[in-house]
Length: 357
Image 1 (cartoon, rainbow, N blue to C red):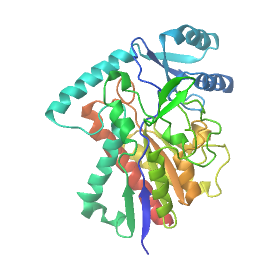
Image 2: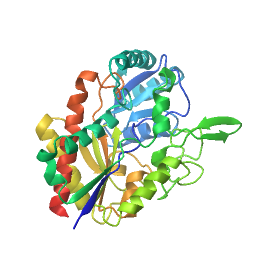
Image 3: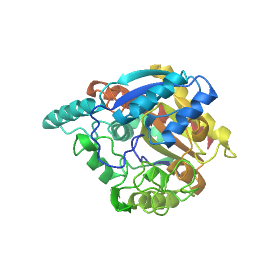
Image 4: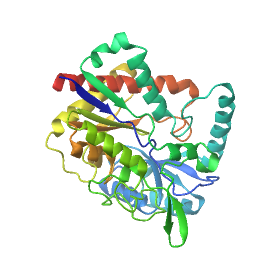
């Protein structure tokens, strides 16, 4: 019997912005809560407009947050007053983006590199998966003997192209449909809040200008409609749905809308744990694994929840390793290292799935 091992690769990146933004003078801080009160305060910051480019709900586990010049004083008062461990990671995000963008332009004169910069490592990692399955077929034939791999290297093409258009758009991750809000035009919905499973609940916004705008309706975006239709065509024989993001070093499984666990959470946990252990054993890099809400944050309407709801036995979000001055811009010299690491984890999870199913 032939199954589909659906690896649908979507929604690249972790932090969102509602409009093109000049990040001159913006800073990135790393914050690490040591108790539950501090963790709750940091979560409240994310609900009040602070842009967390990586966020964890675990104690003694660092998160990174972008702080604008206007936010700097209240932010410092909060973390100092509450004695939250914090450190400055980047003193001028705008300068880092400008430098990275200039380097990208220079490199494109030599050779086009798919997805350079903040959103780059995810499509690069997916292309490497394709390379391993095709160019290294003999070595990986056992993964293909009884299984189909369905791979979408990039879904949000308009958003991705916009993120490559200049330094002001460098942190973009939403789609590009125009929406009106109080006489203002804001572009795009968060594709990873646009799926029709607990749509527009906690962790999503109904404000078109918000980073986590869920859209006017579920599946309002052409990109998510494509993914939905593909999911339903595969779900009756699909074993795994995998979506790859950057960054954070996580292997996450449902649910994202609640802290409750799915009925077969032990299977999901076993697959995620296998991937994390394989990466650590091969490279030393540590991945945190667990349900999305319990180890990261609530995100209702996400694609991994919908994939599991649609019928895939296992549904996982892989948040890749971060690097570079803002996490999303690994040096070109390290891309091979990161894509290899990603493949090691994916291959190990695939082997576990074959063993289980």
